[in-house]
Amino acid sequence: MITIYLKQYNKIIRNADTELFDELGFDDILWIDMVQPSIKEQKAVENFMEISLQTKQQVEEIESTSKYSESENAIISNSNFFVPTGDSFEVEPVSFILSNEGVLVSVRQADMRTFREAEKRLQMNYRSFSTGYHILISLLEVRIDFDADLVEMVGKQVSSLSKDITKEDSIDKAILLRISTLQERTMVLRENIFDRQRVLSGILRSERFPNDIYPRLQLMIKDVNSLISHTDFSFQRLDYIQDSALGLINIEQNEVVKIFSVAAVIFMPATLVASIYGMNFRFMPELEWVYTLDNGFQIPLGYIFALCLMVLASGLTIGFFRYKKWL
Image: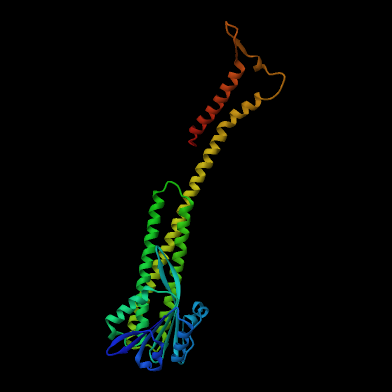
């Protein structure tokens, strides 16, 4: 799909007919927005602009020259934009091409809130968008505002996670997965905000943009720097939460090991007594310890003695542990 924004009758007109390229010139066109363009639409724009649109591989490259570069005929800039998906987001690359005549061409593969908001601004105050340079800056401004919303959203999720951990009696696998997911989101967010910073730095070094744009660039770079600092803080907070979670897990494991260790030590003397009296020796005096009642019933005193001895040994062990304050 292609949308052409025309400067006619002192207002901005939207049109999707590529045949207009045969009738109009650069002075009549302000912005060409392409969403999942067809081969025919790409060829029409390339013939009109006398440039080659970038491939998907070129748009996704991370080199500095692929993020912002200038040639004799155009300025090429690539940047990653976020597409919200519920409590998360996806990253979609967008390619921008600015001709020397001030015509902006944007190529993307998904519908984005940033472009809808920029279009509203264009329709409401078209006099402030005299060239494609101004539209590109407006798109980046809107994108930075939305980036701030995403940073705030991740910050709230981190805060909620921290509160959940303090309320939980035990840390399970789900908590660790939430921490890992938020860490990944924060890293992707920071990486792409840093990508925005590189694009703005390239524009700031350029001498082709109108003079009224550069003061806005300074403010945008400050906003981006503050967002990077905020994402760094969120990531550090996640590291602290992860360390706390792992510490709680270690404490829980130590408590379990302590219980088993104490149980083993308590029953060790009783096990020793049982082992001694379980030996198959012919001479065992305690086997003959018997008390006979008046009715002739015999009570095995040796068996009772062994049981009492095991209980006494375990009781002395427990008493010793409590005396040492190990229990």
